[in-house]
Image 1 (cartoon, rainbow, N blue to C red):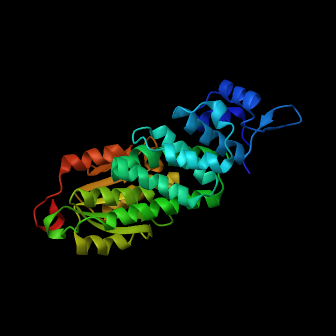
Image 2 (tube, rainbow, N blue to C red; image 1 turned 30 degrees about the vertical axis):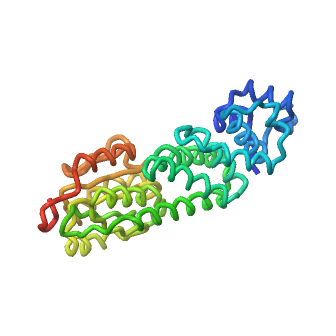
Image 3 (tube, rainbow, N blue to C red; image 1 turned 120 degrees about the horizontal axis):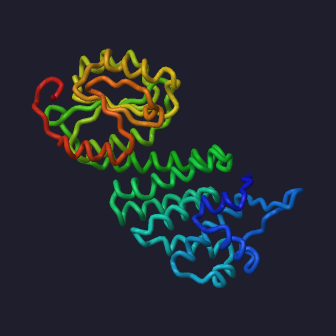
Length: 304
């Protein structure tokens, strides 16, 4: 169970601490317990309820009206009101509340609605990514458990795979060729899956090798496939003091015209990048680069 302070609730819900106290005192929205030093602490149920209440109040409901709803009525009202395609914060709040409740059906319905209304890429960028960032904050605070994180990750993975599978196939001889992989031991795949979708949607050909690839395997892959670009994401692997060595090794094993590097580990200062390497800070930077490149290349080795 979570153990939140009122400042935690303010950060996660976007509702000011002063307002939370008023809602608590006047309407009994939350029921905190107090520590031996008389400090309020809140549990997962408090956060989930606050997120739902914030969603409804953001859509014009009166707090006095919301306070009378049962938990079941509250959840139903959230699903029915999260229909504003451009009200991203309310959609994220709805997703967080569904995650805390381990409500897979509600999570899937809210994500599917965002995708249907916004389109796949905007829904991922404006709803799913902020949702994952909020989960990251909660994870650091120890208020998200592994089961909740796995539920969200696997559901998003399903959405990404389904959307990618629905795209028209691209012939490798008619497009730029990309190799996408995660370093050996790296399992955080969502960003790479989205890159895979974005490339294919723009007419690039992708050899998607996924998680946990031994680096030496790139030698035979590059010799056979002769890619234009190599793309990887470094979230937890390699160790920070081995990132420079890893980048140099990639360039030696698979010298390609373009090497794209993404993820928290590659953002550290002091890295020296090869001339063909580009460090992506944001996913939008990656998409901008793709749009500048264009998909079609010469039907020659390497597609340069």
